[in-house]
Image (cartoon, rainbow, N blue to C red):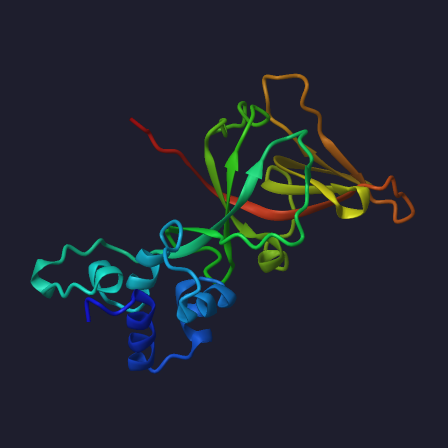
Length: 237
């Protein structure tokens, strides 16, 4: 079996468990389209923690899935708790509008994160932080180089209505949706408007103010796309 491609081992194990592709996608947290590509052999070497996530999902060692190496159960050191896959969707940087690539065919980067116990059924999405727009957030600042883990707001909007002090990922689009800014902000609610504030020692960063006037249209669209749940960073040497 060591000479078999890893995706064929994955497919055999999937069938052994009685799962269809959709079930493998659901259990692993990896998008269905990606599962299809893997099982066709379109992607020889997935990026990020994909193989580790798949191995955990099918309850087989990573060495077996990746290399076809059988490892006795007694030789395994199992990490406590389970992990789920989350996609690194991009970079948050206040004041920076980037062109939207509607035809991006690059393979998504997936990492393993702990499940969110408060919102277990919501998708988790990950953003890399650039800039100092939240370096004065309390009780914990969000710094340049941090990575924020959020739940997709459309998945939790009914149970997590916006309120004061929530920390969120805000998408601001303009030029008919061709350019967008992703940034981290803290919510302030007022009668007639919602404000999304930076928490920064740098005075150049300004709040985004959304008036509750259905007729107001300046060509810019503002939407909350994520509710921040965790911030992490790693030391590199």
